[in-house]
Image (cartoon, rainbow over all chains, first blue to last red; front, top):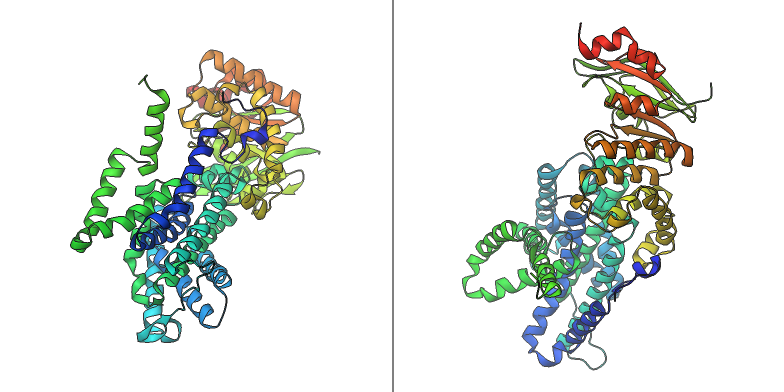
Length: 326
Length: 250
């Protein structure tokens, strides 16, 4: 029987025993994965983990706050190169990660200023401009980008006797778990409510005491922090970065992941990341078809399942909850 | 004077259109004042000027002898003015409870770290206040429902509750009973009356339904084409020749 007896109980993380059991199973599977899957699959899972962080950040901005941004490639590049330089100067991994996120967050605040005036497609164009500008700056400013040869980043030294691939997987999955938990907490707090309020009715949010300037910029800052960390983790995995990696397609990929995974859904962000990583792998023999797959999937999702993959999961769950009554 | 809200010679122009012209209205602490007038007479514009959504072209608005001009809407709400909207502006994808919790936003002790770490003391404290409002407005059955799924009458109540959650001293109600059934209108009138009695909140109300308006209001102001044409007791205003002309024509 699902009976809530206090407000505190109502706010508990994973309140229902079913949710807790499911969560336990997922965690078990995630921990066991590298011991049963080949190294190649483990590497792909690592990519999914780091993309999930970026998609989650993008979802905070697009899904929760309702501010369309196409400038994510810019934040990715800023995060990646900040991370690269910090690592080359000898900063330890975690410190460089926080540094990369912080630099990206500061850039995010700057980009957020147009959002105080612009809405919808106009904001999308302004942020698109930012992404392209950052790309051009890195391509043309060799001091930042390391020139033609790019930046080389030292691999992580595995600990606990794990193989490098497994070690990286566990580090990234742990980071993803941290970010996921923080995101859950954030969106269920007063901050998350302010974000959704701005998305659903900005004037009403303002009249109810939500400072639009502060919370729009905060949303941009948090989102670009996530994206900066994504960029940094990506740089670490690749071991070598050059500006050409962070072109406009990266922005679009993150956007696609948000829409397909599910707008304003954390689980959806992970599903979306899974999608944009797996599709290019599955279609690796027809690489030029990948954008077509994205486009068609977005159309299908918007027509048949506006809540994305996560919405499909919700409906499936409802089906079993109501079974055999339909 | 001791007036809670004082609007002095307020004018508002949009390009060539005059929405308000030299309107002066004052609301005393504890009273209920109704603003009436035909469509497009500037009632909502007056509200928008008071709550900081529009910047008036000339004139002043003072709340507790403090000017509100130049402040952002959220800062004005923090001073103690709350409002509802004529065409409902709710947070449609949130639950009824969360809508009210947004109303509590300005009373939260804000600390980003507690938000990240799920320290929920503040949530629980404010939830208690929201539950009082939920009980007052009979919203218990829909507490966790998505607002978009609720019927119109309930949505109107949610908006009223959200405004109450900010704990205002002055409540601006923009057509609180429009679009409701007769029964709902009577209920709403009772609640508005109770808001004044139980919470001691001063009410400024825009209303087309003159029956409800005159039942609730101590005083009445009539606007037409952005100009104040009458002021007095509800009976006086409704008998005023200018008001009759505005509503019925020559």
